[in-house]
Amino acid sequence: MPSALSVRSGSSTEPFLPDKLYTEILLALQDRKDAFVAAREVTNTVVKELLKIPEQPLFTPKQISTAAAKVLGRFDKRARLRFVAEHPSLQN
Image (cartoon, rainbow, N blue to C red; front, side, top):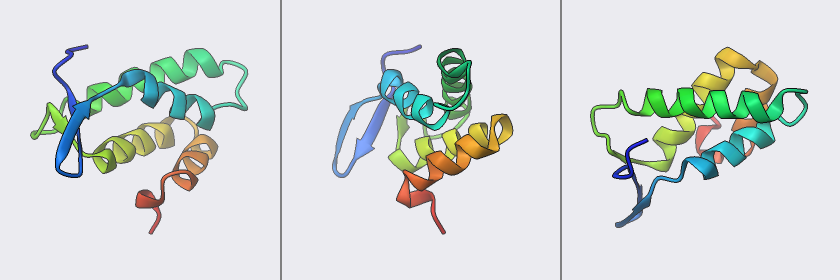
């Protein structure tokens, strides 16, 4: 993955850390027997989705969370609900 990806945090930026995203997705998938492998695959898919965003390589936390929720929804609906519950910006 390109190392030039960044996350806009207020008025500053920080590096995009796929391992942080992986950890959050792993927590959402924790009830699955294949949680570690599934979390890695979902994380890779989320990163691919993020790279399609025109503004990349600079993302907002909401863009990352939205992409993760979308991919999780296609993969495991219960995990998506768990993920959304942990991310207030996704709750309507």
